Image: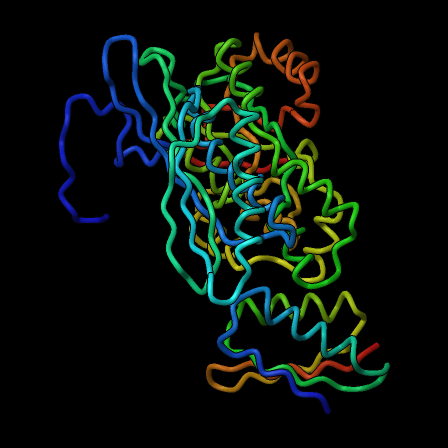
Length: 71
Length: 320
């Protein structure tokens, strides 16, 4: 699984790095995105939905772990 | 500046307390100077275009006050050890050509070495004290005219994300490098009551600033607001600058929605603009002719986007 750690990055970098990761994998592959900002989580979720990914979210203390399965 | 004691001077017409687009200082009964400063980091790849946009952006605050810019000073922060000086020359050339177009004399400037490139101008303008157009003086019944579309922050973010269409970018570049000069001159002739330029706080952010202490409210019509091509698509992909959420969080309590507003559309309405249009409050009996005059003089995207109403005081109601 491809892992993208965007903790501490300001928008739009979390979305840009996630998009780069999604563009580099095949349909059905998973990308794990690790975030620590709610706005970044919202924007990455929006990107994932626009790319027809399925999204599984785990909230751990101050972090969001989004597992995106490319559509 | 909170808590810092300001220097008092009876000749200050518009000062720091107003939070207006620029400061205005009386020199005589017929003459006041306008001062403003603005500089930005690159939002486009081409240095010359960046210079043009930064210059238009800095001059805009003088136009928003109904004034005429006359002189400017360059402000340059450049990583000279990492980038070739030719890049800086192109930026300066772009800025200088825009000043030439505006009839503004460049008197000098200041540069420092900085890892992050920045460019802009300190601008001095002139205005008759009786003709100053403030930000917070709209009147009940005024129509609100916006002279440029919105979405520059989102489209240039899409550029960073590598997804922006070239046609969308070129339209935004042209708009950002267009002076608000014509619109400003025409609004003064048409007897406008208030004006602000739409920049870093986004359309609704600047509209809130116009209405909050006016004693009136504002209705904004979503369907009348023009968006740059690609804006809603890129916002739908999460390609939204950080400033949009900050703007929204700061002013959200002042805005009500009377229609369905998606999360993306909230971002669009608070999208920070670079070198955006003028938001002008014009008496309703003058609005139609003013709009026609704008269209006939090259301000083709000007549109009525709302009006000043009695309620909700100090707040904005977004309608379909």
